[in-house]
Image 1 (spheres, one colour):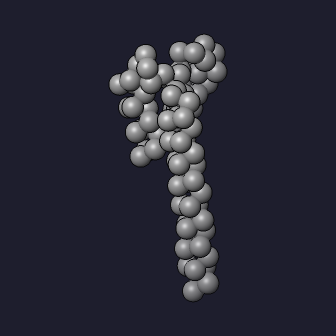
Image 2 (cartoon, rainbow, N blue to C red):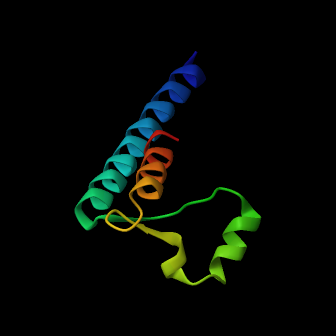
Length: 77
């Protein structure tokens, strides 16, 4: 019985943390008018380390479609 309760508490703490992180991502992306692409794939993460950082950044003024796609993927994903 106690283990189930502990899982519930941990799950709620993790969900609150993820909500805070998503809110910060959204706030920073809207304030700075740019967002960096993110990939959960290990190979893409390794390859991204060798890429020019300016390629991974989507600016709201120059690439609005890519910017909003990245915002929605990071926040809702």
